Image (cartoon, rainbow, N blue to C red; front, side, top):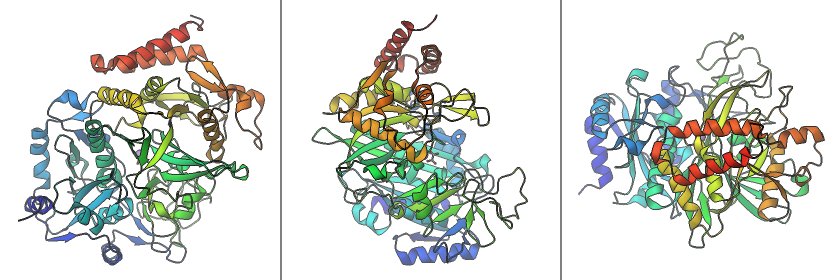
Length: 584
Ligand code: OXD
Ligand code: MN
């Protein structure tokens, strides 16, 4: 008798009609075969094998270069279960609309069956997925991003406990592109895109959208969070998880080279994008990284912003949509060098300089996590690592101080629920559009966000020692438009302040928004920062926060009555704390 997996593969083959089916085993030999084949058919361009051994460049279709949120749907029976922040289609309607796009889509192509584990193979918290795809680039990327192949099949056995994801490049047309999720039956369909976030179904589709649904059902958390460990001079490591919207330096923080290394503080990387966190029997919150690789944005990455990743991506890395130098090395805007002559742009044309960037702004590297010099020796601990701090953050040019600590779990959930990031006019630092992005999960929460807030509220009281919840803002600007804080490796000073708070070693000033560092509680030796700048960095302006509170109230309107009362209560408390101080 066929296994549930075999039956689904058969059914998918009947629909998509591939000329061949290959079951991926994750072996080196298989990777070599895929590489050869992609070099032959042009999906891979060989990079300089002396300076970048086993590194390749992939160019995606120019109309397929980023996640497409407008074509991403949560398909629940009831619309309200997807909530006001997701695109919704009824499951039957979605299937009727999308199935024809799969019909015969793999004719003349090979179908790859890609079994994978999210999380360390030996972890009780791990889950199995199987992606069917007609893209060898997707198969090769999944090998880096997850524990792929035989290891997953062996773990699955004859069980039906896996999340199926059917993916086809289709004709790569945005008009016929859909990324649809059926959380009630734990199924993913994606057609018409070969780009990472749309096509590597283990990442955003399973590890966040479907997993967040499972996590609520099963009492755990699937979060868009990096995981890092801060080692202190005694060798003790304190683990923290942090959520930031895109373009706020998440990967850089996760892989930071600490500016306080000489004082014994260093940062270990466990994950750069996703955390699965469970309540352990001892009442701690324990996190695993479900992924096995980093799919990071290349532009802006250099020896200063992220020296660890610059080392890591020098071998066994897939580059997507970067530019290439005439010595066949990958290149992007913001790498340490000025544009060399003879650059080939991300579309494969001779780059002529000028306004269009040589690398696509969303060009990426895909590299095994184990290659980072900062990877924690415990990153694959099957029982996860105990989380002592949760960090939220965003880009706020004027409003938020460098760091503040919430009063208690419920207040911290409110801080996460009201997270926002601004686009700024870089030169002037003027404030642009504010995008609210609760817990950085706006595009990734697989269900109604009000219920998600409720789930967060319910987790705290179940923890014996709930993690402290902090908010950071590396991006505050002075009246002259300049950044007030140097960022990058210096951010360890903020992590150290958090550690000192957790350990009860430093005091803080009480403000309407939470606990803010007293200037003397931050470790600033070796950094030249004036007292005035520090005061600006840490200031909480009640008038600005009163405006923020009103913007939050407007944002909450979209959730209607479903918004948990506790979140509304936190908003009212903030308003009254501010009311006592504002000039109105
Ligand atoms: C990502 C994202 O690519 O959050 O990780 O967009
Ligand atoms: Mn992400």
